[in-house]
Image (cartoon, rainbow, N blue to C red):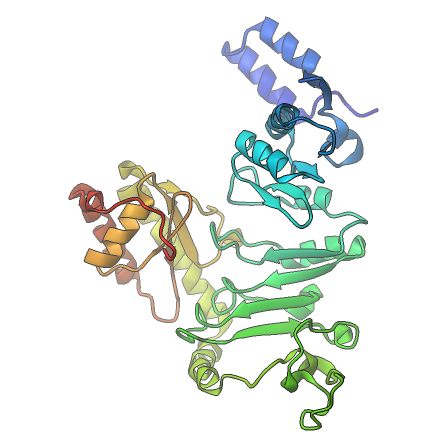
Length: 385
């Protein structure tokens, strides 16, 4: 049998006792109840994760809404990984989400997943606990759109492959700003867009990567005439084209493709090593500006401090972020975007964003707060932010 408490929990408890913030009697009670907890006619095992590497899961059928709420709250408070509610009804899912804000309900799978503990990063250990022999596909954004956290693609792909799973990487917030080594990482499938750091502009096409040895074993769920073997036969049946061509669908958007070309040429001319170096320098500079100018005004840093795991945007949290975002766009000539619940996201395109641009943007954010311009805007949820 494994230890009764993990080292971090025990150390924190002992530190609290030493500091006098936790009475000895409370610490004794905490140690007594750590392995198991009785909640609403259920006994929750908080040490399953220590023994097996996977936290307790909630099996939905037969449980009342009160039980779901109480068990989900208990697991969320103790687990270091995901909390799963399986085979949940919509009513049970609503009860779990009420108890654990940030949970998501996947209706078709009847699965509830609680995301990362800090809302910014997901540890390698948490992924290792989640990926097992029942995993078919690991789908992740290489650079997380909300926080700019960058996964270790090679390490995660290796975890998936050891479990017999494939990987699908979304590169939308990486390509053109963060070096991506798909072949080196042995990644299976990747998708992305070209309107962000590739600078293709509105309507720019997306792209798909499929590792060469998977071309013949994977098929596209969307059949189109550009993806068939004999394009102009117009036969009634469908036979996919060989290789990567089978993943095409309809006629390519030629004008949009032409608009992407100069963006790609500029990235190739600059070199991704230099682009990445400037991106890191600029995000570091923006964080220094946040510390000096914005933190005193109530902004939190919602992106990783470590440049090695940070992409090319910085997210700043503020209770009034939505209204600040609207004032910046409408009045100040600054174009960030807002992501719920409180993220003001500033994207840095290293090819053309200057350090002076960043300094001026922060100065205008300060003006919005000090002049209370944001207070003229409603906080109604918008379709596009």
